[in-house]
Amino acid sequence: MNVSAWVWAGTLVALTAVLLADLFIIGRRPHEPSVRESSLWVTFYVGLALLFGGGLWLTAGPSIAGQFYTGWLTEYSLSVDNLFVFVIIMGRFAVPRPYQQKVLLIGILLALVMRGGFIAAGAALLAQFSWVFYLFGGFLIYTAINLARQGEPVDDEFSENVLIRWSRKALPLSRNFDGARLTTRENGRRLFTPMLIVMIAIGTTDLIFALDSIPAIFGITQEAYLVFTANVFALMGLRQLYFLLGGLLDRLIYLSYGLSVVLGFIGVKLMLEALAENNLPFVNDGKPVAWAPHIPIWLSLAVILGTLSIATAASLFKSARDRRRELARARR
Image (spheres, rainbow, N blue to C red):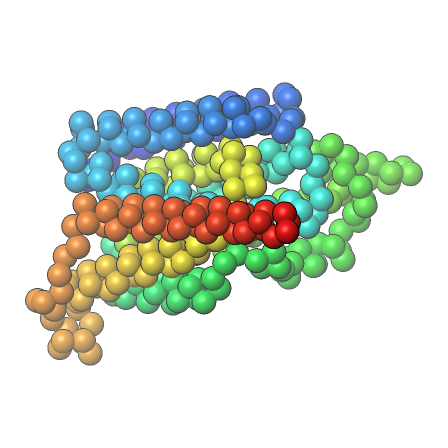
C-alpha cells in the first residue's frame, strides 16, 4: 500500500480537527453525558470508522479494507478492556463524574501520542528485521496466557506505579479537586490538584496497554497507515463508550477470556508468518518454512468477531442468570 505524504497529512488534519472539536465541547461544558448523548457519539465514531473503511475499499480494494476493519475491531475490543482499569482509577481517586470526560479525553490524547511512537518504531523494526515477528508473536502468546489466568476482572487489579508514588511524594498536592484544573491556590500557595495524579495514572495505564495492542495489530497488517488509523478510530470513541457501558462493564465477566483467545490467535498468526519469511540461521537452516500456512484476513476477522461475540453473549447470559438467582434467594 503506497500512501502519499498528502494522504497522511490530510488524514492527520481531519482526525485532529475531530479530536479538537471533541475537546472544545468538553471544555465549554463539563458534564456527565446521558446514555442518549453517549450513544449518539459512539454511533458517530463507529460510523466514521465504517465510512473510512468503505473509502479504503473503493480506493485500495477489499483486502486493504478488510485489514483495516480487522485491526480496528481488535483495537476496539482491547480498548474495552482498558475501560475496566479506567473505572477503577476513577473510583480510586474519587474523580467527580462531570469531570471524568476531560480526564478520559486527555488520557486518550496522550495514548495517541505514545502509540504513534510505538507504531513508528514497530514499522521501522519490521521493515529491517523480519525476526521481530517472532518477538511480537511470542509476546502476544505470553500475554494471552496471563490474561486467561487472570480470568474475571477484579476490583484490585490497579496498583499505583512508581511514577504515581513519586509524584505523590515530590509534588505539592492539594487534597481536594478544583473542578477539572490541574493546579489550584490554597493559602497563597500554588498546588497541584489530585487531577494531575489521575492524568498520570491514565497515561501510564495507556502506555502499558499499548504494549499489547500495537503488536496485536501488527499481526493483522504491517501497513503503518492502517495501524495508525485503526488505533485512532478505536480510541476516539473510547470516552463515550465509557459512559455508555457504565454498569454493563462488570457484567462482561468473560471478556478477558475472549481477548486472551484473540491475542493468542494473533500471536500464532505472527509466528506462522515469521516461519514463512524465516531467515534466522538456527531455524530451518535459515530458510523459509514451506509448510507454514498463511491465514487470510477474512479468517482472522471471522475468528476475532466470533470469539468476541461468544464471550459477550456468554457474559451477559451468566450475569442475567446470576441476577435471577439472587432475586430468587431474596424472595425466600
